[in-house]
Image (cartoon, rainbow, N blue to C red; front, side, top):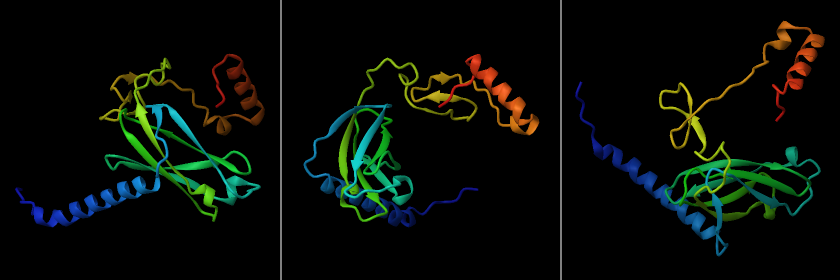
Amino acid sequence: MNEKIDITQSLPVLLRNAVIGFMVITIFACTTGNKQTEKVQQWTSHVIVITADKDYPNPYTDQDVWAWFVNENGDSLVRPAFGVREKACKIRFARPHKGQKWMWKSYSSVEDEELQNSGELFSVAYEGDNKLIEHGLLHMSPRERNIVYATGTSMLFVGDTHWPLPYRAPTEQAGIYAADRQKKDKTRRC
């Protein structure tokens, strides 16, 4: 079948997406003001700390905070924050590419002006010596048969799964097995 695609029907969608992308970048550019752009290494976890104006006895359940990140190309993603104490919460973000400026704006489910924040990050090349991230972030290979780094380098991932253990052994035996695995340094706690 050779069907012709009418490009005139696609133009409104393309135009709408271009306008939305331009608006997003413009909004972020206007809301970040004169804040200094922080340089951070790609592939590393960068932590943004936001301090609330009000006290939240249980920040995990009393409010939701998240940040929307967008780069100069219009790529965007949302990251949730997590409460660490009454007034502070953290947002973690890792930049996948070097040489990109990322703008972020935080939002919250409660009326708290200090939780509505913004900033800019500029990703620079990774210079560390961590063997786990020197080739970039992990993702599935194109054929989804193995895990590869951002550079395309394969990664061997070996794990020991205990999920069926509770169904196959009484609690006492499961405890003995887990203690033995930990003693042999086979089980790591995260």
